[in-house]
Amino acid sequence: MGRLFGTDGVRGVANLYPMTTEIAMQIGRGIAHLVRHKSHRHRIVIGKDTRLSGYMIENALAAGICSMGVDILLVGPLPTPGIAFITTSMRADAGVVISASHNPFADNGIKIFAADGYKLPDAEELTIENLVFSQKMASLRPTAEEVGRASRIEDARGRYIVFLKNAFPIDYSLDDFHIVLDCAHGAGYGVAPHVFTELGAKVTAIGVAPDGTNINLNCGALCPEVMAAKVRELGADLGIALDGDGDRLIVADERGEILDGDQVMAICAADLLARNKLRKKTLVSTVMSNLGLDHFMQAHGGKLERTQVGDRYVVERMRIKGYNFGGEQSGHLIFLDHNTTGDGTLAALRLLTIMIRQNKRLSELADKMTSVPQVLRDVSLSRKMPVADIYGLKSLVRTFEGDLGKKGRILIRASGTEPLIRVMVEGPDAKLVSAMAAELCDHIRRQTATP
Image (cartoon, rainbow, N blue to C red; front, side, top):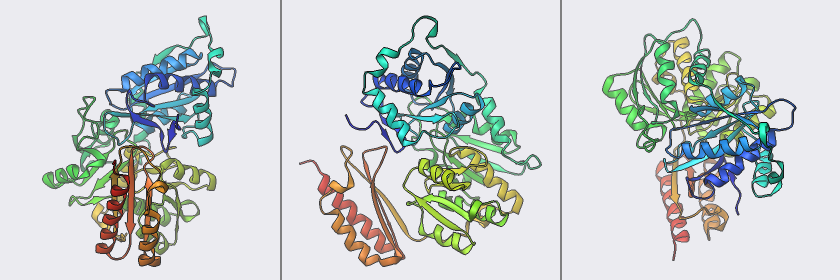
């Protein structure tokens, strides 16, 4: 068997290995075993997004956890950051999120938060993985009154809504804003519209009718053009698009121009720098962020530190070095002064706070960062494959890197969540980087084609 845990927990097609009920039950047992090290009665929070398979995985996880003598607290559909919040608020021993984030509805996943609301480190995920494939837990199952029990937190959404509203200045309101909000038919549908409405905004909500199969389907942060078009149609002040589990966002200004995570990070980092609130004057992002973000931070007296791809690695670097703001180009924004993980709704509130404080439209704030031409492409594979196994690719990359020199970059990596190879080419000449990206993708397709 290969590794269970990838970049962001366990993920795959629901009801196929590794996302089967059998593995989910064993993961539940592994999590329960991992937290049973204190004398108190242990509790684990379980939440999910709106996928049809969530019911199946939820029950399997719950059975596994209860079979190890640990109680569960069910919260139902709730954004990933909301589950992190509930875990710490309820003083639970762990929190489990059933979600495949931005993936299609047929996929699902399991990611785990520790008691402090931060995602489990790799070492603890590996411990759970080893427990899943061992027989160690078979002899540890309690009986009679020691078996775990389940209860539901009926007001989990309300608690999280209050938490989010408290992240917005008490003396500010959104009375003058018309916001187009796309919840991707995902976990944010029952939270985000209430937050912005209760703070005074006029909200046009789309993507708020989940049916178990339409999560992320031509909507949300994966398809922000839908939200942007609605902004232009209605003359709204701002567009916000969340992803399926609500931990990231993409926004559009009042003209319907789309801003990615890099541009939003630039706006927020500049504001924090100006107010001496950006710790060590450092923004943390990944290798995927545009070179323009480096130039922007340098111009504003700060610096950018990069990590490998994955918001968990951004958070890890922030915690180790004492930084308080970071994120990803894909729209994960982490404000450690407010929450322990990426939170799309909270990030939107921080952006709106800056707009109000500076009395500027989003388009006026967005023109500060100049992006270097960057092309991102995905190549679908029939199965997951390491980049190093693709014949001739390393040599082609070396040739192109020589052409770009120090003014550009090439990054090719295997997706940690899907059978994809992701290609990024960056440089001063848009036509050149586009041609390079196309040739690299063609090479990958030829070398990975099934005979």
